[in-house]
Length: 150
Image (cartoon, rainbow, N blue to C red; front, side, top):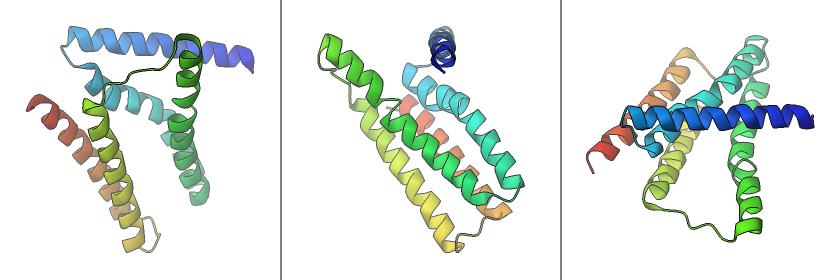
């Protein structure tokens, strides 16, 4: 288990470094690369897992996978490294300019997700899937347009 975690950590380091370098070469800011490229890259395995179990008739497991994955990403994926860094080097000063807007976008997407499910009585259809994809595309378009028109 530890060796797998170290291996994943190594690959993650190179993925982040490569993404930052690619963004630098393409003149795309780190916030855009993180919100779009890195987020999509880390979510593809979860989406595939959810697709497989949903296709087998386990829709609840597909939803639990997505919710659980995002919960771990936010609370453990951020909390653990921040705790370790702060324990060694002290408090972390985070720039909040783009962070506040990103959190509001996350809250908006979650509210749209819940509204779509509630309005459709928690029944997932092609239309519901399309609305969820449209919500994601809208968030991406908003992020890019907002960033480049500030």
